[in-house]
Image (cartoon, rainbow, N blue to C red):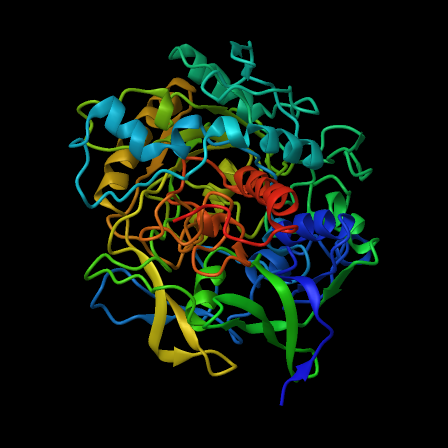
Amino acid sequence: MAIRMKPVDVALIGGGLTASILGKELAEAGYTVVALERGQMRQTIPDFQSPTMHDELKYSVRHSLMQDPNIQTLTFRNFVGQPALPLRQLGSFLPGEGVGGAMVHWNGQTWRFQPEWFVLRSWVNERYGSGFLSDEVTIQDWGITYDEIEPYYSFFEKICGTGGTAGNLNGVIQEGGNPFEGPRSDPYPNPPMKQSHSGYLFEQGARALGYRPFPVPSSNSTRHYTNPYGAELKPCMYCGFCETYGCEHFAKASPQVSILPYALANKNFELRTRAYVTRIDWDRQAKVATGVTYIDAQGRETFQPANMVVLCAFAHHNPILMLQSGIGQPYDPATRTGTVGRNYTYQTMTSIDVFYDGQKHINPFMGAGSLGTAVDEFNNGSFDHSGLGFIGGAYIAAYQTSGRPIHHHPVPDGTPRWGLEWKRAVAQHYNSTVTISIHGSSVPHPNNYIGLDPTYTDAFGQPLGMITYDFPYNDRLMSRYVTEKAWDIARAMGGRSVSVGWLDDHYSIVPYQTTHNTGGAIMGTDPTTSVVNRYLQSWDLHNLWVMGSSVFPQNAGYNPTDTVGALAYWAVDAMLKQYMKSPRSLVQA
């Protein structure tokens, strides 16, 4: 018999970025809120302090801040019909576990999506014609526009203390910023990061080809800053321990620094850790969620009644939990019908190393998660796709995030993988190599989706989530095109040699790529092809909402966090102004 808790107005599943935003805003408005986080409590002090936090083996290799695949993992296959096998250790992506979620170990790269991404299907049809793409590129409009979400982008960037140089301020192109971004209503709240020597070399090469480089927008704070909630962020120390690490300096805009303390201070908000949610409970006749069942820290089954349930878990966990709870119609790749699990997308990454053979001193250990210089001439809305056969694009950037010894040892093609010659090559090239990142978009394909595995179960006896994914032909074409442009920049940078890491023919889940999983519970205007409406409210249960990148109909050629945060503020605004006083579906099907 499950323990029954006192009913609350809102149950949040997760304790990361979106749960912190909703918890703070809803509790402040007077609603009782419980957030259920499966991991442990973590705070900047004492959990993120050095020297413990500067342990590359513990955090980058053994993934101490990440999901434990011994308790719950995924199965994976490239295509329908292939046997899916469980992930025994994390590789391609790193879901966070514990308070703060994946935003504890993010790099702080804070990109807005171009306006075209939000109306992608309409934009392609209007600009290139309805027959431009095959029916295997199942892009969709989001149901909102850039102009609608722009104020929420602006507010989220103020919460994060984002630094950068505006490129388009109220429709006027600004010198030194990204000229291809959508119009901004406000400048960045902080100046950009300092430029590294690698960024300078990249800038010189890009300018020589006529491109317009700019500093990467960063939520690694560049000065003392107080956000709208009153949180005090400190200047980044360029210590080189951002990705896979918590920030000891209060400089990276994790929930623990920027948002969560102001939720926890409110008596209407409760955060329960070690609360492993197993299902969303719902009334089949009334078609409303009634609460959440979870396993508590003592191993007891517990039921939390709630008037509203919000999924705030990591991208693929949200649709998996809906599938395990029997909510919505599962997507079927054979018939291309159903919605839950549909349009799983990822990110299409390549890289190039420019070797200066000891002639330059890059000092890679003086890094930060968002320390970079970029060009955006080859993202989706920046260039003409006529005759290219694909849609989408990528930004190209030289980041300097880490010179940590276990992972950072660039060597040219043809170098032995071990032994004396490898060691000599590492010594020669460690301090004189610049890496260029090509950060590409991902379009949906009918065979890429999230389902439930028919064979494997988790520690609680539930079917594991199953990801079926391979690089679509569209994305392989896009990646080749943009990587060739990046290769031109690499050659213009004046290095002694260049090594290009082209996109493989098939996606592998083994090497790390990005933690930018998207889709599976996508937003849209049609309940037959989307899970949630424009406000991120479920079409099936009006008191169930879904946050995070699960709702992206496709993934843009940018990091998703800025859009995740903006959408959370967009959704909670609709909850407070439209839904809470009169619960109902805010969009009629």
